[in-house]
Length: 235
Image (cartoon, rainbow, N blue to C red; front, side, top):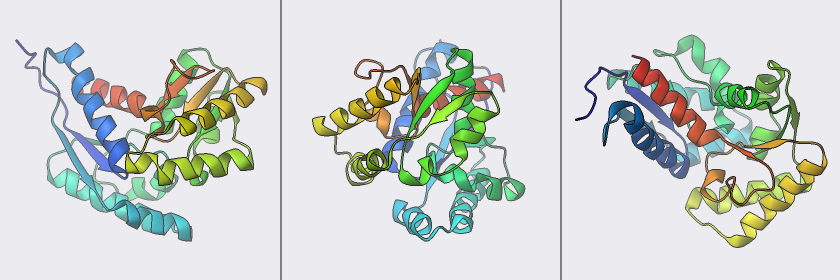
């Protein structure tokens, strides 16, 4: 029989459908190990149109991004959520603007990934994700607080990866050529001394994993989902 222990209600602030769906599925499947077959905590999800977020990011309008995130946060609080996660690395740039006004606490995806990197003994991490993310301080700051180094993609790699993410992965398009592009980037990062790579876009794990990567991977989507399960079950 499923474990009937009370659990905390997880609120998902969604940005892209693919990343949010993978995170939701992972929460539901991983919770069974703690709660019993088919059991998982309550999960509510709210997401504004991805186009609204992209418009703000293109304008450099982090206050606009924060406004969208806060609106989702308030809706999820009204639905009964106890804490929030956002399975989108890029918009965590706006989280410092969100937290002072948020009705609920958040798990920070980069902090979760950085903790996992430190636990596994990695010291120099390659970072992949949207151009907005890799140009930001989200991961360098989280890693730096743990004494870990961060290697960003080259400008050409950033352009190629950004195109794959925004034109393919968020649209549910998965091509062998995209896998080859990531593999080449990871090999270059390995040559630069990286001992692991962060899949810092929540859609990248849909095509990349330890089985096809030249470096060990840190899957930001599934690590966040696992952290959410742990927080929910601890309740």
